[in-house]
Length: 276
Ligand code: NCC
Picture 1: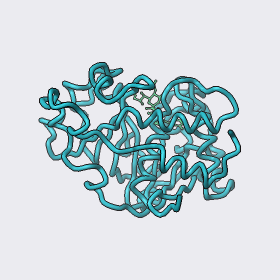
Picture 2 (picture 1 turned 135 degrees about the vertical axis):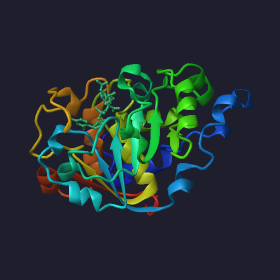
Picture 3 (picture 1 turned 120 degrees about the horizontal axis):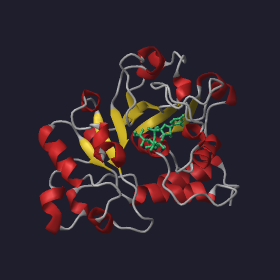
Picture 4 (picture 1 turned 90 degrees about the horizontal axis):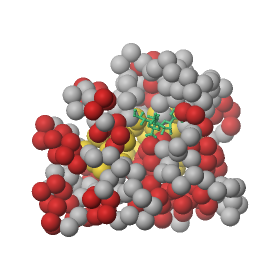
């Protein structure tokens, strides 16, 4: 059914997508040697209730946007993967409260994640694609990228930096809702980090402003604001059902179309105050 109202979609997202992060309680005691390194507090306990939050995509259309000051005026800012702030402050700001990363970036040696100072700032949250029906333990035994040992190592070397792992079902619960609201069959691959980050912030914040997920008129084939790499797939998706994710966000946007055109900005309500 593609005809759900914005209110219905918001309630589906609130009630059916469980965005809680992994704790040692989610895994059997037999793997405690690994799971004891997971944070003791939940993410919600760590940060409390947040007010206005910004989600900053890595899109090339952030370049020349001059949105930095506006982004930094939020109580918390979420960024993705390799996205830097240094040298790009005018366009993307400098505050980084959360960094949502995929397990590929964390695990593939050529990215040199462990030593890069970029990743030492803010709260880290990682996700790894799991098979559709896998439970936590099945996924733990066979993650898409082997992050387990590296995670333990990172935690030992950076014990004071909160570092969460998302539960594997979360992305598929979100995928189901993207599929339900799409006019055709979408690819059976998990949604992008962008959508996961938006959902995460809708759980923690009262208001979420998302920058350049729905692109402004600055849109071009430039993939990232921080790199000279041109590929249209970055904006419309290839592996991820990104186009469909964006259509879903369009349906629940509380701002107007001019604000998207001018600033690439979408405003979404936090789930806490939503009556479902
Ligand atoms: O590209 P990526 O994401 O790091 O971008 C973060 C999120 O920003 C949104 N985006 C990005 C560029 C653009 N032109 N338009 C956008 O809307 C998307 O929502 C995107 O999720 C990922 O989702 O994790 C992704 O990660 C990269 C890559 O793994 C990391 O950057 C680490 O190097 C993927 N690229 C490749 O694997 C080549 C990308 O497909 C998705």
